Amino acid sequence: MAASAITESDLKGSLPLVARGKVRDLYAVDDQTLLFVASDRISAYDVIMQNGIPNKGALLNLLSAHWFAVLTDAIPDLRTHLVSLAIPSSVPKHIHPQLQNRSMQVRRLQIFPIEAIVRGYITGSAWKEYQKSGTVHGIKVPEGLRESEEFPGGAIYTPSTKAEAGKNDENIHPDAAAAIVGEKYAKRIEELALKLYKTAKSYAKERGIIIADTKFEFGLDPATDEIVLVDEVLTPDSSRFWPAASYAIGQGQDSFDKQFLRDWLTNSGLKGKEGVSMPEEIAKQTAEKYQEAFERLVGHKWADALTGKS
Ligand code: ATP
Ligand code: MG
Image (cartoon, rainbow, N blue to C red):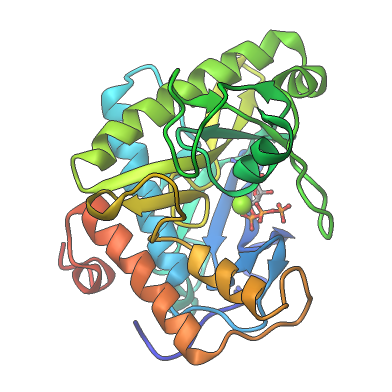
C-alpha cells in the first residue's frame, strides 16, 4: 500500500459536504445522488483510531463494488444504491487522486435506522450474550453451542440500533427492530438480509473464506416502495471473515478483518478509548488481513486492482 493514509477527504468546495461518518465522507452530487467516499479511517468498538490505514478506503470501495456485481448477478431483482464508480465531472482533475478507487456515486436514499446484522456462526457480542443468558439478541437459540459454532438451524437475523455519532450501536431483538422500521418493512428487510448472507456465504466459501457474520444497511426508494441495499457491503469492516482452512470450533478464529485490531485494543486496555493511535505493526498487519480478504474474494492481486491492471 502507498505510504500515507487519507483520513479526511477535501474536495475544496467542488461538491458540498453532506456528512462525515466514522469511515466515509458523503458529498452531494445532485438532489438524488451522493458521492460516497471511503477514507482510510478505521474504527473499532465505535471509536475512530487517530491514524489510518493507507488505501483501506479504496479496498473497501472496490470490494463493495465487486459484491454489488456478484449479488445482483445472483439475485436479479436486487436493487442497490450503486450508480457509478466514475468521478463526477464537477470535481477538478487535481482532486481526482483523492477519489480514485475510493469513491462511488450512489442514490441518495432514506436509510432505515437499523443495522441488519446476519450471523451464521456464534462469536463476538453474540457469544458473550449466549454464555450469560442462552440467547442471542434476546432470541432463544439451542443449548450447548460452542464458541464459533455454526447456528444449527441456519443463519439468524440479529439487528442492532444505528446509534448517532458518539453512541454505541445496541443489539436488539427483531421485534424491537420491527417497532423501529414498522412491520411493513421489517419482514422484507429480514428476508433480504438473510438471502444476501446466504448468497455471499456460498460465494466466499468457494474462495476459502467463512463469513461468520455481516452487517447490511437498507434504504427505501419512496417512488417504488422498494428496499434498496446501500452502504458498504460484505467488507472486512462490516463482516467477520475467517479462513476456512483453519476453522475450529470451541475457540476464537484467525480472521481477515479488524478482529486483530480489536484484540490489540482489548489486550492493551484501550478498548473504547478516544484518540488511540495504532502502532505501525498493528496497522500493517491489519492492512495485510484486509488485502488477503480482497484477493481471495475478488480473485485479483490487490496491487493490480489498485493500479487498474485488473
Ligand atoms: P455513522 O454513520 O453512525 O457515523 P458509520 O461508521 O457506519 O456510522 P460511515 O460508514 O462512515 O458511517 O458512513 C456511511 C454513512 O452513509 C452511514 O451513516 C450510512 O447509513 C449512510 N449511507 C449509506 N448509503 C447511503 C445512501 N445510499 N444514501 C444516504 N446515506 C447512505
Ligand atoms: Mg458504515
